[in-house]
Length: 176
Image (cartoon, rainbow, N blue to C red; front, top):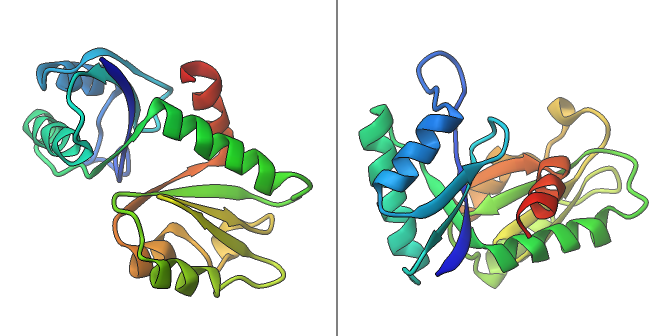
C-alpha cells in the first residue's frame, strides 16, 4: 500500500459546492481507498491504495466525489513523498520572504516552455517558481491585489488548486 494525498479543487465555495470533511472521507472509502483522513475543511485527504497510476486514482476519486455530492470535484493527487518535497521546497523558497506564499498544485506536469512562460511573469514584488507539479507564488502582503494567482497559473499550466504555505506545512507535519 502507498499513501497518497489528494487536493480537491473548488469545494466549500458558496452554498452549492459544500463537501464536508466526513463526506470526503466516506466518498474516498466508498471508492475503495483505505485509511482516509482529512485535514481541516480545506479539501485535503490522505488515503492508502495499492493502485499505482495517479491518473486512475484521480479518476476513481473524481467519480466517487461527483456521485457523493452531485458536482464535479477535480482532484489532484501526490504521493506522501511528493508532498514532503513540496513542503521542503516551500521552506527553501520562503526563507526570508515577508509576504504571502501560496502553492498551486497542478493536475499535470507542465512542459518546460510552459514553466518558463509562467516564471517569466515574476516581478520584484511577485515571484513564481515551478517545481514539478507545484507552482510557488511568493507575493506581497495582499493576495487579492496580486497579478500572480491560481487563475493566472491555470491559464498557462492547466487545472490547479491552491493552498497557502501554512496548510502545506501543516500537512507535512501531520502526514509525512
